[in-house]
Length: 106
Image (cartoon, helix red, strand yellow):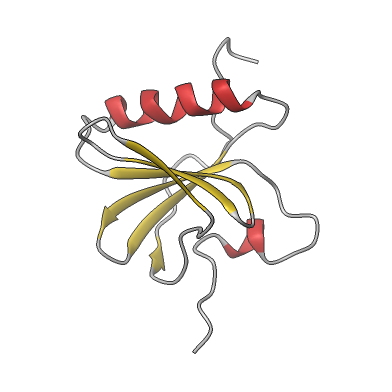
């Protein structure tokens, strides 16, 4: 059975918007967060760790850079690259649907 992306509006179309964050709230429950475009990879990674800190490092975060390019951030401080992006599960949208600003407030 094919697995669908967590954040279908970002990944299902040819003009997908990358990067974006996926916060794993619990097994099979995810909160996708769009990011503003035009940030460097380093800026997006820094924002991923900042998001982890905001959530008190209780949840795993995935930064999706492309359809086959993801960086998983673990609460213990470990980061691992993977070609598999989060898929399936229940997508929970937060109260703010505005893109998260990259460092520097741009």
